[in-house]
Length: 438
Image 1 (cartoon, rainbow, N blue to C red):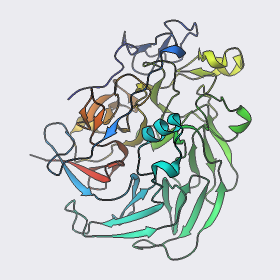
Image 2 (tube, rainbow, N blue to C red):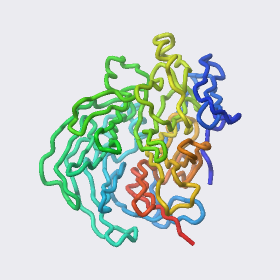
Image 3 (cartoon, rainbow, N blue to C red):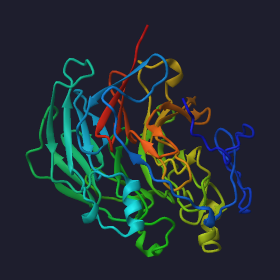
């Protein structure tokens, strides 16, 4: 399997426990992560390249490639843009259909060409499907439209008798009881959120605290690097904290350009997220990352990146924020569009996967060669990342020189039986990855 690591920028020089060092010289910058020292090239706005993928879809006899001992099957298919998933206590699986038919890279390509959404077609499916696999054989016996007429939904959450949905412009809550196959009563909007923005930063994810007393909402930036004015970024590039009734909103952490996947570290109990970093500074800048989220912390956007490395486009504007920027824990490759995240707590996979993180990498467009387009894995030991990211589920790239891809993975979900679901939005498939115990 090919490993799409940072080919030049991520020179893993030596292991170091001090993760708070970095310099901001703007030339050959370094950042000490939880696992290694990362060498970064100088930023170069003139070096920015675009290579858009061309989705050709999966042949019926083909599937992504997993390591030896795993099998990959189609859990669901012929659905429009599956992006995110959750599982209820009774085993019901909810899949949100939330993006346009065309890929994000297609939207950017059309934005560059000046074409409108109407000219290229395709809108959000705006619904949630429910799948039930009663005999637990990995093949759902039934499915239903659980909730429809939404506005670019992404995050879902169940707390007691309430089903939460994060639309792009707000969080809604609906009456729900375990086993329901359809929402029949009207919902209530409990949090309004800023919508719209650059590169489809429309996703709003949800996760609840372990005691379910707090809900955390991820909200991406409305621009690449604040070019539309920071006055338009209020409550954006943040993870917000609210109570289950939507009240008491606080900024839990800031400077996170586009946080999407969120998951709880099973050992430390700390909130972790994956973040899509900024574009147009060259092939190897800026690395997307996986990081623990410290309450009240600032992660750099838009003034600095990967520690105290000042963005040349915002040079000299906020030296106080640059100085307090935290180095994220694990670099995930530049422009990989790392979106999905789940920590593996199951017993089905081999022991080396226990407590590690699976990451859905949707794939690049702002670099000269394709990167991402895989589900990556980061091993953890004692609650800390213990190595760089590695490929786990690959084969999404059909022909790299041509830019042909079969699909693009997004959300990842560990099921109660220990198998893994992967939402492949542009191909309309949800893949199931299971380990064959010997």
